[in-house]
Image: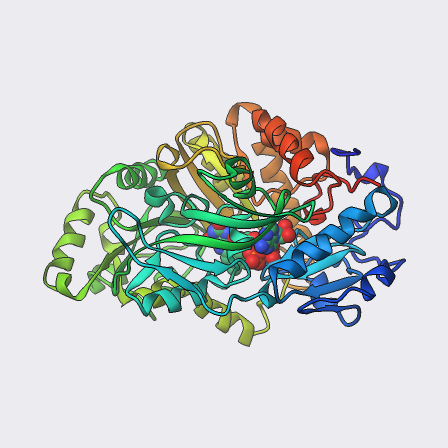
Length: 520
Ligand code: FAD
C-alpha cells in the first residue's frame, strides 16, 4: 500500500488542501454513507465547526461529521471506509475538543468523528482493593475537567495533567499530556491502565501493558495513527484539597535551571514544577497582584523588571487540612535551598481545583476581550539538558525579542521515571526541557504581534533547533514532508511504520497529522 508518501508542497496540485488550507471541498463522498444507520447520527451539512481548531490557521472542510452514540457507530464507519478499499480516498479523523494547532483533528472531504458525542452512561470508578490501584474508566471524548470534578466527589484525582483541562482524554493521550507533575508521574500517557481502541480496520480491541501491548504502546502518543481510542482507564490517587502556589524570579539562567533540576531530582520536593521566561516586560510584578502576594512587600516594590530577561520558577505544594499547621514551614524549607532573587518571592493559596483549572480563568478573560479565538502559532520543543544553555543563549538572547505575544514556558522533566515504550518521541537524554512558545496573533496585524511576524520568528527558532548536535525534538509535532517525519522519529520510525501497516494499512485515520497519505 501507498504509505509514507511525501506530502511536499512542491508535489501538490494547487487545489490540494495542504497547498491552500482554506479551499472549499470539491466533491462530497457522502452518498454511500447517507444510507447507513447509526445509534448517533451523521451530519452532512453545517459542519464548519469541524473545519476549525484552536490554532485557527487551518480550515479543512469535511464531507460529513459523525456524532457517535456507541463504539459500534465508530467501528461501523471505519469498517465501511476500510471496505471501500483502494476505490476511495475517504479519510476519518477523531476530533476531541479540537484544540489542535495545525489541523490535526480535521479531515479534508473526509469524515470527522465528534468524540465528545460518545459518552458512557457514567464514569466508572474502581476503588483501591489490596494491591490494585484506583482508576476511573471514561469515554475518550470526556474532558479532563469533568473527570476532575467527578473523581473529587470520591476524594480522588488523576495524577498527571495538562496545564489546561478543557481537552479530551483521547486528544491528550494521542500526544502525551505533559505538565508540572510529569517529572514525578510521567506524562498522562504513562498513567493509563487500559484502553479500548477501534483500529483502522474497524476492529474493536482492548489493550493494556499485558494485552495487545503493541497496540497499547502504539496508540499512546501515536498521533491518532493506529486507531480511535474509545475508552480509557486512568490511574487515580487520593486528591489533596489545597495548594501553596509559589513564583520567584531569577536573572541568571544557570542558577534558574540548577534549581529546577535540583527540584525535579529530589525525593522530597514540590508536587508541581514549571517555569517561564520573561523578556522585555515592564510592570511585571503588578500583573501578579491579583492572585499572588509578595513575601516581602517593601523589597518587592523596589524590584524593577524593565528590559531584562528574567526566568520565573513556578512551583506548587499540595496539602490537606490536616497538614495546615506545618505547610508553611514545609514550603519555606524547600525554598530555603533555592537561589532566586529574594525580593521576588510571591505566594498564593488556592483550592486544588482552582489550581488545576487556572488556565480557564485566563480563557474567560481573553474570551471577553475577543482574544481567545485568534490564530495561535504555537511552537513546542523538547530540548535535552546538554543543549539547554546553547538554546537559551541563542533563542532568548537573540531570536525572541519579547514575550508580549504569550507565555514562554520552560521546565525540565526526568525521563528515567517515564515509560519508554509509547510512540512519543523525546530527546535521548534522561533530563530534557519542555519549552513552549504559546503565542497569540492579533488578526490582521502586520506588526510584531501579527501572524506573519510570529511565524517568521518560529521558523528562525526551528532553523536553529535543526542543528543535529542539539538533539531537539518537537512536541505536538508538525511537518510537511516524510523526510522530516522520519528524522523526527529517528530509530522509532520503523516501529511506527510497521504499526501503521498492521493497524491502519489504508492510512484512513488522522490525515490532518500529514504523516501518511491515504492509499487509493
Ligand atoms: P484534538 O485536537 O481534537 O485531537 C488531537 C489529535 O488527536 C488529532 O490528530 C485527532 O485526530 C486525535 N484524536 C482525538 N481524539 C482521539 C481519540 N479518541 N482517539 C484517537 N485519536 C484521537 N498539551 C500538553 O501536553 N500539556 C499542556 O499543558 C497543554 N496545554 C494546552 C493548553 C491549551 C490552551 C491548548 C489549546 C492545548 C494544550 N495542550 C497541552 C495541547 C493538547 O494536549 C493537544 O492539542 C491535544 O491534542 C488537545 O486535545 P483535543 O481533545 O482538543 O484533541
